[in-house]
Length: 132
Image 1: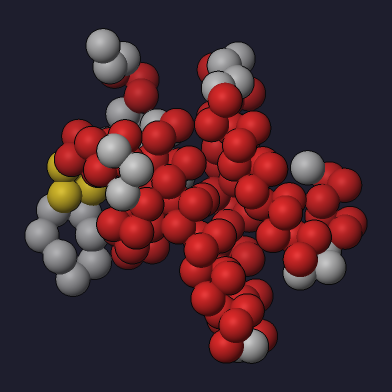
Image 2 (image 1 turned 45 degrees about the vertical axis):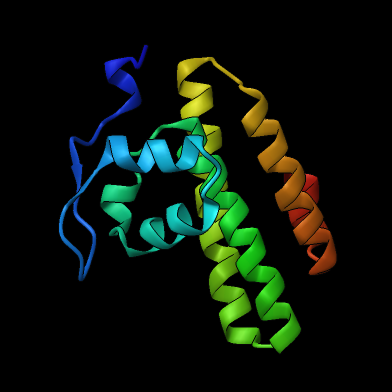
């Protein structure tokens, strides 16, 4: 059963696309389609994105962002790596904030933190790893 607090948005308005139902986004995330979830989350304005509190959506967004970072590292695009790292950390901070406010710490949060910390170590961002 889905609690009403899990969805702060009834519809997500995606740039350059028709409105997208949050239930559809959750379904994609629940089924592990991180590429679709990530690309949709990137298109959602940040103020709308901050209202999303579903653990599956946030976890799959982090997974997609980590994969994007790996692609960018292979291309050695420093500016894009920095931009993607900032997005990744914002999503992780949002996930942590949601979990703290609900006093609920799912396995997805810890897996997300491990993924992000591994990426930060590869990027030699040791001070950030210590913070998480």
